[in-house]
Image 1 (cartoon, rainbow, N blue to C red):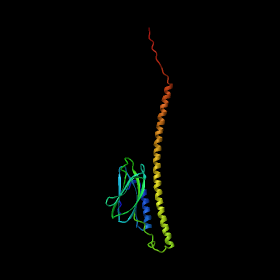
Image 2: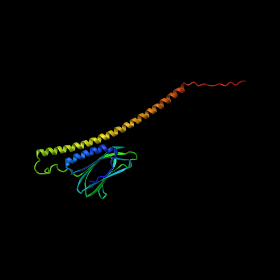
Image 3: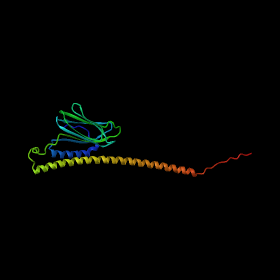
Image 4: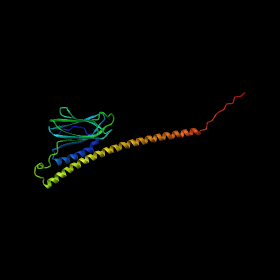
Length: 225
C-alpha cells in the first residue's frame, strides 16, 4: 500500500483512534482489507493529494467529512492511473463513493480548499481497499455453520458496526465542539463590543446632561456717553 500525505498538528488524537481501529480490523479480518483513516489540516488556498496502489477488479470505498472550518465544505477529486476523473464534487461537507478499479496502478484522490481565502479546514477520510473476506474458510460452503462459527460471525459483524458507530459519533462530537467554540468566540467578541458601545454612550450622556445644567455667564459692556 502506497499512501502519502501530511498530517496536521491537530490530528494526533485521531491518529491514535485510527491506529486502534486499524488494529481491531486487522485482528478481525486477517489483514485482507486495507483501510486507511487520516484526519489532517487543510490550509486555505491549499490542496492535499493522496495516492494508493490498487489492483484491477478491487472494490474500493472513499468516505470523507469536513470536521472544522468555514462552512464545513471541501472539493474532492478522484482519478485513475490514466488521469480519468472517477469522482468529482465541489464544496461538499461529507460524501461516500464506491468504485471498482478498472486497471492496475496508482489511484489519486485530492482534497482542495483553494476556494477559501482565509479559513483552514480539518478533514477526515476513510479509504477502504478490498472487501471483507469470509471469517471462516468454510463460511461459503453449502452446509450450515456450526453454532460456534455462527456466533463468531455475529460477533464479528457486531464489532464492525460498533467501530463504525464510534467513528461516526466521534466525528459528530468533534464537529459539534468546533461549532460551540466558534459560537463562544463570537459571543465573547459581541459582548466586548456591546460593553464598549455602552461605555461610550454612557460617557456621552453624562457630558450631554452636564451641558444642560451648566451656568452660562454673559458679560455686558456699558458704553459711556
